[in-house]
Length: 345
Image (cartoon, rainbow, N blue to C red; front, side, top):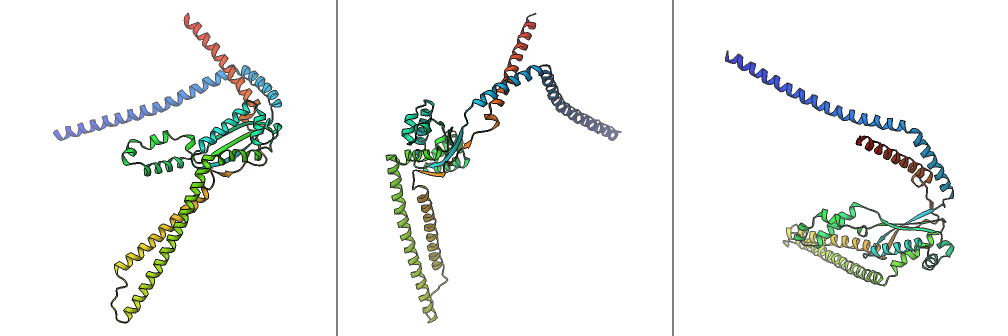
């Protein structure tokens, strides 16, 4: 009798469990369904709102498009070209200051000064419309900079200054590669600007001195490494001759262990030193190639600039969108006012 009662209790417990699970699934699916119903309901409300005011929106977009058409017809054609550079010796900030200075002269329409700086005609200087410089953001620049930071500071500093803090303090000047964009109303002016932009940094006395010192140090390092490589190579030849001499003596009955651990260790040490020198030489050649100039040019200005186009630059599209948004704002403002009047009553 007790066994039968226990079985009934177990069946009741299982039944209750399945009921709870069933209700849980039902509530979950009801929740998901309510979300979709809410989205659908709001979508219908938006469509009804647009249908109610479709005529007003159509007129506003049409008027905005017409205004944009006239503005677009009278708008000057602009061209742009890009100079991509990689500054050395922390000269990036000065480059940014120079580019911003040129842009300020453009805004001030100081064509005479621009013509004097770039050594161009005042008519070409008057065609300049914008100078802009931006970093080519690469997350690897931040990671590599943090790795170098870790190698340079002590462990306690690293613990108190983690990667997130380092990343938040990383500025535009800290990126390695930067893009200089120039806009003008003529397409063939850009190549004439490049020399002045580069020389404004390259001919700077301070950075030129650092460049020359760096070049001298790298050349000295290169000479030392080459001399070390020759010495190690000579030492290896001497060592190999000694082994061969030992082998001859061994064949004459002299007891020399050519396969001893000491001999193998010495040979491995020489190969390791050789490998290290070759690696240092390759890094030195790389530094000589990348640090021979204050600014490395990755991509020059194109001789002919590209015409600035695109839907987001088109005044017809911009004015049509503005007309739509302005009408929407006015309608919502009237609806809000009506709601507040009804709320008072």
